Every structure is written in structure tokens, then in C-alpha cells.
Amino acid sequence: MTALPRLFRTTAFKLALIYIGAFSLLSVSLFFFIMQGTNSLMRAQMVQTIDTDLEGLAERYAYSGINGLASGIRQRSNRPNANLYLLVDYTGNELAGNIREVPESVLAQSDGEIKFIQYARPGDTPEQGHAYEAAVRIFSLPGEFRLLVGRDMSEQSSLRGLLGQALSLWLLAMLAIALVTYVFVNRRVLRRIDNLTKSSATLMSGDLSGRLDVTGTGDEFDRLAENLNTMLNRIEALMLGLKEVSDNIAHDLKTPLTRLHNRVEAELSRDLSAADARAALEETLSETDSIICTFNALLRIARMEAGGTALHADAQDLALLAADVLELYEPLAEEDDSITFSFDAQSPCPAYVDRQLVSQALANLIENAMKYGRPQQGDTPLNIVVAVKEQATGACLTVSDNGLGIQASDRVRACERFVRLDSARSKPGSGLGLALVHAVMQLHGGSLELSDAQPGLKVRLCFTRESGYPNKGK
Image (cartoon, rainbow, N blue to C red; front, side):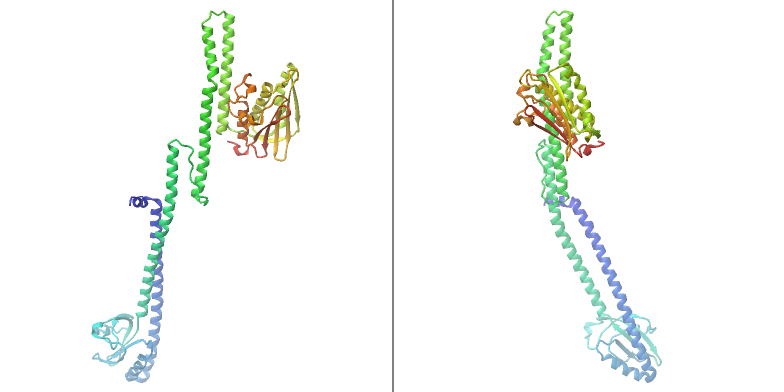
């Protein structure tokens, strides 16, 4: 019973009432139109039948007089489905006819116009009274005779009753079908809405793992549920990313901040000369710059993964882009004989990318190779190879070294934030380089692949021909 008031308040119930009312009004109007048209048609046919019969009686009266007219009426009264006739004299006595008990007041209105009267048939008992209806014309004849010619309207009345009964049955059937359809549809719709409400309540309580039910019918509720589930997946991923960033900041920045605090505290406890104080400040500034760089890298990654970074993509030649970035590091190779750079590119190699973000990603890969890609043998120089090639699916930018590389089991984890492998823990860094590159490739809709360079590590940035288009102009 508690569900009934809720049903009455639903939009589906109100719409059902509107539809039932509209269709009922339309049905009644249609039936009345049909009934009115049928009545008009039958009345016209009835009047035509009476007038045709009158013409024949008039000719009979003209040739045979009143006696011939009475004889003709008697003959016609015995025919099947005969019209109605009555011939009376000036005293009201019946001379011929097949109806009885016509009021004198009706016979007195002998103007020839169509009139609707109640009459009785010969053989009816007085208890039946005037049980029948007819349309008649009444005329006065010389000698104060009066003639009534008409047509029984029982067929027309039966048709009206049949149409009225059909209308009643149609309205009842329509109401029954509407109610059955409403109950079926509304129960199903309410069940889906209840599921949406329960899932929403679960999500609002903080459990982002809940998802809306998808029945597989492909209806509007399924499409809504699929879109909401996609949105919830995105929200859950962003919330998990935020939690990871917060946890990583708390975990990985605690050590440098503690080290910075201890250094400042230790230096303050000593009596420093001006040179020592300056050196301590320079070390503190360097440590602070490192922390700020880590924060900035985290913010850039978070913004790119959340879609908050605008992708200003346009047509670029990856070969020229890589050459410009590599040119910045060539002076290092000239100063350090242990580092060599090689460049292998097919130009032009077009791609639709954000030049600034891809340049930053390439710079991160080159710096990672310079930090962690040195060969194990100390006398072997580090060779960093940058290659750009066009493939059938798009363009690929590759950076490889001849160092120790990364084990296959660690390559996926190496792209996560703050992950530093055992071989890199003794060297400076924040563990955000590959994470930033991964975020840039996700923003472009491309892929990041780590493989074995035999020896060393090979990192491939692959851009499809549609890369950049999903977020164009964002």
C-alpha cells in the first residue's frame, strides 16, 4: 500500500493519465462523429424513401380517389419491411394503415413536414403503450381526410445502441490495456530507477567501487548507466591518483624535507664563517630546488592525467623536433668524452602533437639515459641513440642507451610515480621522469613501450595518425 502513493506521484503515472484522457476524448469524438454522420445518412435515406412512396400514393389518389388510395395503402402495408401508413376521415376513424394510437394532436399538424412520433403497432397490448419511434409526414386531403406516411426508426435506434455499446467496450478495453501497460512498464522503470538510486546512495557514502547495473537491453537506461559508469571509472581513477600523489608526497618528500631540516639545524648550532654559511645556504637552496621540481613534476602529471592540461596539438615534423631537443645536449657530449649521441631520423616524419609536451618528454628520456643508462664497464662510453621513423600506423620516436636496462618484470612499474629501481637508488632523482612521459603519451592517445636494446634500454613513443585529435582545441 505504501507503494501506491509513490506510484501516483511518478511522472509515468501522470503521463499515463494524460494519455488515457487524450485517447478517451479522441475516441469519444470519433464515435460521435461516426454516429452523427450515420444518423444524417440514414435520415436522408429515410426521407427519400418516404418522399418516393408519397409520389406513388399521390398518383394513386389522383386516378382512383380516396377509395383507391385506401386500397393502395392496404396493399403496401402487407409488404415486407413496409413503410408506415395511416388514412383517417374527418372524425378520426381509421380507413387504412398499419399503425395505431397516433395522438390527435399529431394528426392535426398536417403541414407535410418531417415529424418524429411515438406509435404502436397493430396487435400490441395497451400495456406496451407507444413503444416505437417513427419519422412521418402528415398531409390534409380534400374532404378533411388526413394521410400519414412514415418510416420506422428502430434500425437507426439499434445502430445508435450498437455504436454506444461499441464505444463503451472500446473505452473499457483501452483503459484495461493502458492500466496493464502502465503497471508493467512503470514497475520495470521504477525498478531501474530504484537501482540507480541505491547505487547513487552507495557512491555518495564514499564507496566509489559501486557501479550501475547494465541489463544489456541497450535501452536509454542502459546507455545512461554505461555513461555514468564510465564517468565513475574516471572519478575513481582520479581519486586513486590523488590518493597516490598524497601518499607519495608524504612518503617520498618526507626524507628530503627531514634532511633539509636537519642540515639547517646542524648549521645553526655551529659557529660558521661567512664562507661556510654561504656554502650551507647554497646546499639548502639546491635541496629546495629539487623539492620544488618534484612538486612541479607531480602537478604536471596530475593535470595531464586529469585532462586539465590543454593539448595545443598541431602538425609537427618529429625529426626536426627531436633534432632541436638533441641540439641542446650536444654541448654536454663535447665536454664529457664518456657520452656520445647518435641521431637516426627519416625526415619529414609528420605527426599531430603538442610540441612543448613532446619536447619535454624527449628531454626526460635523454636525461634518464644520461643518469641511469651508463654501461657497467667504466671505460665504455654511454651511447644515446635517438631515432625517428614513420610506420604504417603513425610515427615513432625512440631513445635507447647501452646501459644495464630494465628487467621485463619491472618495466610496467618503472612508469609509475616515485618508483626507483634498485640500480637507480644511489643516484639523484625523484622517480617521476617516466611517469611524466607516460602522462604525455596518454594525453596524446599514443603509447609508451619499454624494451631491451641488447644491451641497454629502448623507449619508444608511438603516435598514431589520430594522436592529439581527441583533445584538439581543449
